[in-house]
Length: 606
Image 1 (tube, one colour):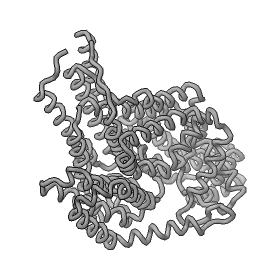
Image 2: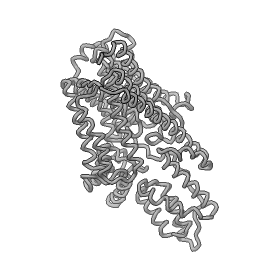
Image 3: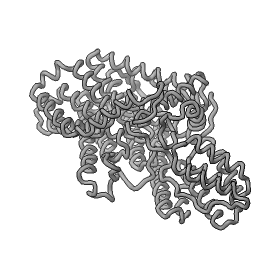
C-alpha cells in the first residue's frame, strides 16, 4: 500500500489539533440555564459530546485515508476496563438498565476517543502544541472564573452565574474548577522543562507564564482541598523528576516562581478556608465518626466499605447504590446519631473505586485496576523521570475521582484525562495496514457519519429537554406542556416523569378529588426504592393520606426522616402530616413544596 504524502499527513495532524482546540475551548464554554447536577443536565456536556463524536468521526476518515490503523501496544490491557465493566453488567443484577446503558456508552465512547487520537499521528512537537492548547483553555476558563469573582454581573445572561463567594466557572462546581486549573498549572510547569518552554516565541512563553499565574491563583483562592493537594503533589513530582531540565530554563523558572508566590498571596483567603477544612478532618470527630465541619466523607466511606464487604465479589447490582447506601445510612445513624452527612441525597460515594465496588464488586473493579497498572507501566517505560512527570499531570483528575465524581459532572475532565493518557501511551504504538474492500470502507465511513449525526441530534434534543424542564420549574410547575420534549428524551424521561406526576398529584389534592393518588402511589413506590428523593417521601405520604391510609403515610414520612434527619422540609412536613393523622376527620395537606431544580445532588465542597 502506498505511503501517504507528507502534505496529506500534515493536513490530518493539523485538523486533529484544530478539533481538539474546539473541544477544549468553545465546546466547553457553552451555557444556558440548566438543571445542574450531573451529566447532560449541565449544558456544556452536550456540546462537548458533539465535538468528541466529530473527532472520532474525523479520525476514522483519517485512518481510512492513510490506509492503516495506529494503536498503543498495550491495547488489549486497556480493553480490560470497558470489557470488564460491560461484562459485570451482565453478570451482576441490573436494577436501572437505562443508567447502565449510558454508563457503558460513556466508557466505550471514551475508549474510541482515545483510539481516535492515535489516528492523527501527532509528532512529539505536536503533542507539546496539544498541551499548549490545553493551557490556553486553562487561561480562558480561569478568566471566566475570575470574572465571576470581580464582575459577577458581566454578561450574566450568557454565562454560568456566581454562587455565593465561590467562582464555579462553567463547571458550576468549585472542585471541578480547582482540579482543572491544577491540571493547567502542572502542564505549564511541565512545559517549562520541555523544548517548547525554551522556545524563542514570545507568545509561547507568555501563554505558559500566564497559565501558571492564573491557575495558581484559582487553585489557592478556591479553597479546594483536592485542588491544593493535587497541585502540591504534582509540583513535587515534576520538580523531583525534571529539575535538571527546569534549571536549563532558569530565567523563565524564576519568573514563574515569582508569579506562583504572588498568586498565593492574592488567593490567601482560599488558603485559610482550605486550612480550616483540613483542621476539621483531624479534630471534629467522636470515636472516629465525623460530627461537624467539612469532614462527612469519613462517614460516607465507612458506610461504603461496609457495603463492599457485604457483597465483595459481584456487588449489590448495577444501579443499586442509592438504595443500599441510604438503607445503610439509617443503620449508621442509629448507631451514631451525631454523625455528619451531606444534607442532599447521595448518588455517588464520592469515590469512584467505592462506587464500582459497591455496585459490581471485584468483578467490576478488576478491569479498572488492570488499566491503571497498564498506564503506570507505560509511563515508566518512558524512563522514570519522564514517567514520574507524566503521572504528575494525572494527579489532579485522578485524585479528584477519589473524593468526588468529576466525570459524572464534567465530561471535559474525562476527555482531558484521555488526552493525557494518549500522550503517555503514544510512546509505544504500532501500525497495522488495513486490507479493506471498497464495501467495507464505505460501511465504516457511513457508520461513523451516522453515529456522529445521531449523537448530535440526541444532544441537541437533550439541550431542548433540559431547557423545557427549567422553563417548567420557572413556571412554578404550572405548565406541563414544557415537559413534552423531556418526556420524549431517553436521558431526561425519568426526571420529566417525576415532575409531571408531582404536578398531577398536586392538582388532584388541591381539587380534593383524590382520583390520581392511587396511580401516583403505584408509580412512586418503585421509584423511591432506588431513588430516595427527599420531596417524594412527602408527596407519597400525602397521597396515602388522600386515600385514607394514615398508617402507611406515617411510615413513609418517618422513613424519609430516618434517611434525612436534618432536613427542615421533611421535618416540617412530618409535623403537618401527623397533625392530619391525629385528627378524627382528616384531609390531605393542600400544599406541596416546589420541586428542587436539581434532580441529582451537587457534590459538597472539597
